[in-house]
Length: 114
Length: 116
Image (cartoon, rainbow over all chains, first blue to last red; front, side, top):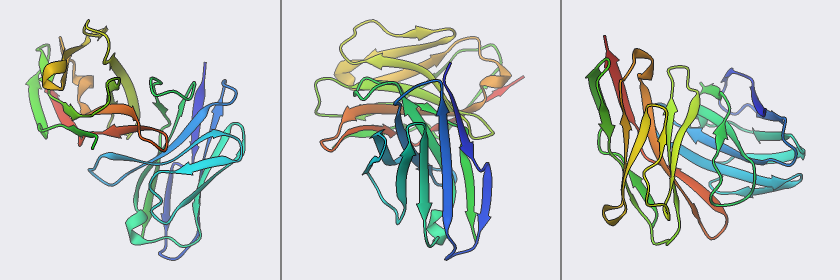
């Protein structure tokens, strides 16, 4: 069975500081990976997706970047945090790259920017 | 433009009753895929059920079922015999090909409170 692990569980960071969030997928080779962001009390917004190692496509950047350094790892980062970056970040995966695929989500990272 | 709308902000029901949550969507695609997810108090997003647009039968999984009305662009979620642990925020979502890649967009969610 596939498992998805996100780290850290929560972060409190200062405006202007760097950020790195990650997720790891186990039990599935070459998964399709996604980053979503959710403002407090809001809906989920897709940020990035990756079909394969080294390839990341941006959907909405929000002054963030993403990378896929390994087949099972997806990283979300920024060099300078903004107050607007606060929220809940969710990593998700799907078996294949197809519009019919179901996405499964990790447990998320709650980010507070002060 | 593709859009998913959930007009019910919150619903409160008594335990063991049936609840229906509404969702309407907009799309120009002939083939699309509709999903319902549940977000628990901890923030976890759990996949519940899906409906493929080309299927006429309403999907059913456990005590979740869908009321798919394609002419009305509507996909309602029905939960029968509700339990306290069904209390959560429920999101309707639609997956489509967005030109630059496949996208999954969400509605704004419906908060369900199940009371004993």
